[in-house]
Image (tube, rainbow, N blue to C red; front, side, top):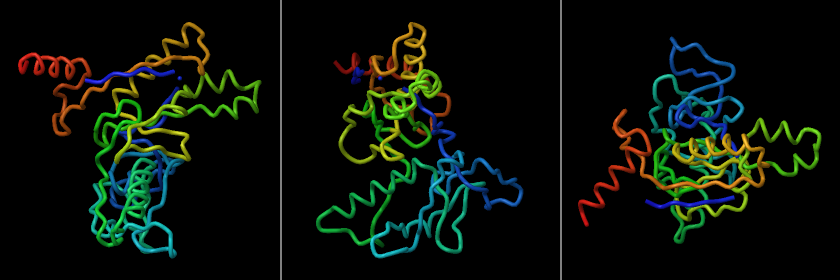
Length: 252
């Protein structure tokens, strides 16, 4: 079990119910479309419209990313479906995840043909603690826009109080390798559910003492997530940590 500490904010996107947003779903005649949310074509999770992104399964230009695997992907009930032009709405997590993979494929030597590329749309690495986890347990934490606070000094207090931003993420070095994702031009980072809940709790506690957002210190611990099919078993971090500790003692 690894732990860490840092020095700074908030999370907005509720990854398990996912975190972004999209257009009306057309996959079910019985599902009433929403004008403010949708279900991601790739992961099938509910998402806010303001963070919806378009992905294409067919080439849109010589260098524009496209993902042929989408043609064979079977969306979950209520999720967006592939449009006639080969595009589909996806959440910001899936969008940035496959884009990062596209870039890795493009930089690989020898290069992998587009049609032969295999994409992982379920596994993630927490940007904060580095634990390997899965899409349902991914959330987003927002990095504070310090330039906005400087440009709007009269609104800085309300902005900081309302957004719960985490400026330490600007200098935090996320783990190297696949599965680690930043989003919205680096303004958000994909983190595991444990870090999301823990950092939000620490943020609220620091707020009680009036500690400025940019001076708040945070700590975290890397705890493996429960099995994806475990349901309510070993849900809390303490339960999972106790089990890991017991296993370590038994093997020593």
